[in-house]
Image (cartoon, rainbow, N blue to C red; front, side, top):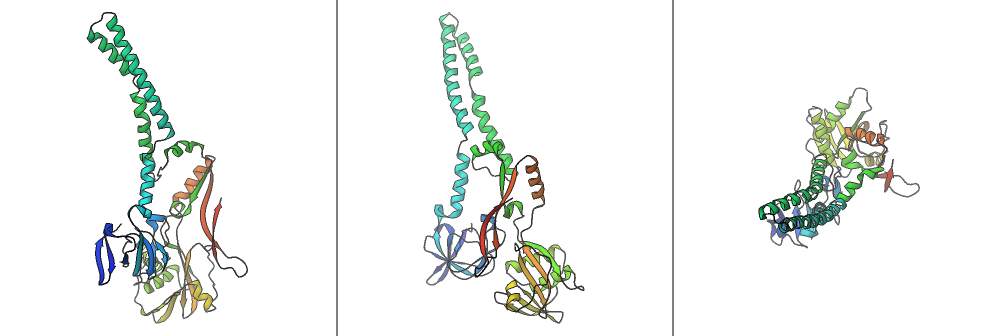
Amino acid sequence: MPNEAHLITDSGTEDVEENDLKKGDKVLIKAGEKIPADGVIFEGETHLDESMLTGESKPMKKGPDDEVIGGSVNDDNLMRVEINKTGADSYLSKVINLVRNARSAKSKTQRLADQAAVILTVIALVVGSTTLIFWLIYGSEISFAVERMATVMVITCPHALGLAIPLVNAVSTSKAAKNGLLIRNRTAFENSRKITTVVFDKTGTLTEGSFGLSLLESIEEDLSEDDILRIASSIESNSEHPIGKSIIDGARKKGIEKSEVSDLNVLKGEGVSAKYGGEEYKLVSRKYLKRNGIEDATKKGTGGISTEVYILKNDELIGKISLGDRIREESFEAVRMLRKNGKKCWMLTEITRELPGRCRRVSVGWVFC
């Protein structure tokens, strides 16, 4: 969470501590800043990076009346937010409390061990006291009787039982955390040996959880995929949009240097155009293609799971860039290992499909093998 927030007052803005914000306060969030508390946007449109909180790699477009979560990052535009939840009521605080309560809860095995330890402790005290009384009655010295009592109590005391279960829990939880497994319920962890089916989340689990280049395609023989990426990154060189920044980052990783462009022009809601090498190029969305009757002649498809950017040269389609989340290299091995051990593997995700008739695109929650 940020330390300070830009509180909107009658005289302008004032920097205040994040802890001083109250429900109903209005704050200004600049590009690149974190949102100081949960609230609702009342002015401005932007893209928010909520990956730290939700695991969703793709920046989410937000506008007036949309809810925002404290701790998420404002990617590109200025916006104004009215605070509706602070402190213990915030989303992040509830997550923290959930994990804290889970860590402090005892498992079924630990509760059973604690009950057994109490009973065995009482037995140890009774047997030890009986030993002391027995030797005193039969005329032994007090030191001899105490020595025999201590010996019996040390042997019968269940201190190992009381320590072993919490120690096993602590070590197993620690080792699991180092391998990316957060245990919230220890009883469930103990029952994990009975698991028959593993249901994976997609984003950030089977995939890398980072929005980036997933596919490049050129449909002109004299242009390579690197040429397509060079043109796109040059046009987006000063962009603050998440898609533009992903294209620039992808070009940098491939060692592709940008070139100078001129006459940069933003096509509101549809893309951007510029002069590159004396020719006019455009980076546009599928919406622009449909509106201008341009046929999608690209062959490589992503099944609608990626954000696609089309490159036009003098209004002729020359290539496509797809951006999205990429599958982790270790995902295949993990699924293979689980299936080898007789576990069913499913994925829980959300897909978008076209419905017939006059229906628009809708998101449908699916579980599939």
